[in-house]
Image (tube, rainbow, N blue to C red):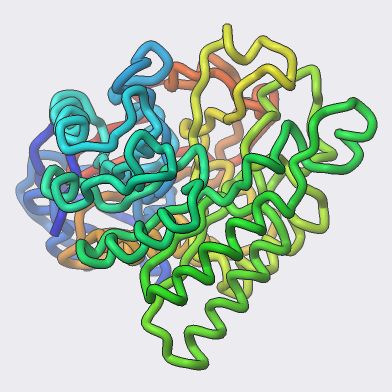
Length: 439
């Protein structure tokens, strides 16, 4: 099984006095980690290890598997390189991430995949799983060479940042990806219909170009139809509208009812669950994101879709940009939010607001992403990778640029108070973030 790429060896450790919460249950136990794997879970464990960690008073959960993460290396490492991006990820409780391929140059051939892998081996603080472009140059025309890229380490294909432009290319991507067991991650957006902000009060009042729900839903509908036709695995990422969730619901019901050998999965971001168009300050381009923040009706339906099991995962869509890009006016600024550093605290707000339970949260950010992409993690269980977060549910803090490890400070939550903080992040038995040392 693909272990991902990181810059350290697997270690042994013993976590004492853990209150463990994952998808399956809650319990109190010690966790013995041997050579980067959870070897034993039980009470009163005594083992000679490289490190003993006291988790008393905190919650121990599986590390987050973030299936939508942007790093700007190769091309623009000054915006976010593998070291800064994975430090931010570890800070936010992320232990594995799928790196999107819309870099410069794009990750559309085995040589660029090999470059990413080399850099990950040198610098990465968490497990990096590269993805490759679905089409050459992300032009949406000719599909890339999936087999050779998979040999170098990709686990999915996507033209993220844009949809696969051609319906013919989208069909071929779904058909070809089946040969290599590679999910196709689709960014559902019709560029001829998309703009700066959700069509409604913002576009009417401030003259911003509209980005209607239809832009997203047209591509979501096209690709679910193609996925059912080709019997392939389609993953729709950062869905933001009621209509898209309804399309996915219908497709999943069709798969179950007729036994179609397709797989359709999806994710939503924290900002589409916590914020709406009513929160947007057009003088602050950190609120500009693609897809845009939507209506209260959309947000409420997305929350319901999570509770009903229609939405499979929560992913960050961490998208760092430098200040000189984000200080432009709203229309001229590139879309994207940098929030890997506060990913788990943001998600935990859903628990504090009693939208979901903590167990359900670990299912959304750990168990389901790992299961969908075939990773040996996502739960605290013997035989799984020792990718674990020790979390303080009581600690409060104010988000500021000073606490953000990412090179991108384009975060709309700056100045807001959050409750719940990562104490330690552990990957393969290594402490990759420790609040007592790293802050």
